[in-house]
Image (cartoon, rainbow, N blue to C red):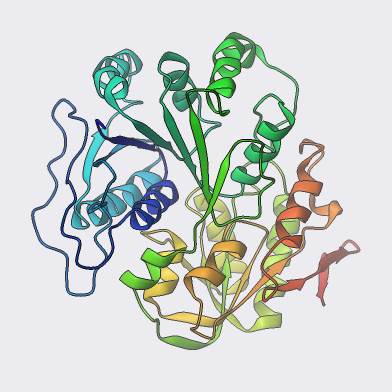
Length: 390
């Protein structure tokens, strides 16, 4: 075995790589495990500090090869900031982390492929967080690993599993199915990558997920229970009120901005919420409007919400729009007494430009949440935009 290589492009992906590595850890008392992985040019050196007492050390993977995480750095500042914090956590756990400026201007793509080609050829297992990523698809079209693991990057995992099961073209759920000029040019790459993401005679595929997914034929689905997060953080201090969790549904063109703002205001009043945890992709203009109109304290988390909530303080009730957190927070906060609720997205909130699949997908995310998650409804009535919850 020549090592394991993980490619991540978001903080949540890196969190779930840590969760996957934790499941590979040896039994207590087994001190055998390798640090580091396939060599990369000029990697960011891991810290040498030993884990704190009680800390899980996921890189000590008995029987498994070493793991190197390659961060294909995004361009937006919020994602980069969270990724740097998560990268340090990964180093603290003993993993080797290589920060790759994959989108750093002219020549970045060619330079990245040249640097990653040797370790990719040597890697026994490749772990990816976003099978819809054009970067990941290009890498998979050039190199075919013997073992492939897909970890969660949000609710897109549900759509990926369903599309692979049906042999469909890989398309993000919030995008319309029509192929634009860019998609037409990249269609051969996407098609080959889709085949590489499916099991074959000399390739195994695993989906490591906390979400209820359709199990594709020949693919192993492994549960992500957020055991590393629970062992590493908390339990949190609980506040008396409620917290709201934001979403980027407005930014992705799915939900109307005015409807969204009205529902946030009504939810804050109905549940006595004081804080609004912003999604890292939410615009500054939208968040300013929410703060001014509702009086909510807008919080820009510096880590994925699962870790923020587990560290605390956190409200006794957490209300979220349909998103990954309605599946992950009940796992991360198990045994703490925190109640999670999901708000249904009504059809009239959707923009005319939204994908035809948007309503069904969002309803599926809310409807498949854990049984202990409350399901709320809210509807905009009349020109005043008044809403009601039930």
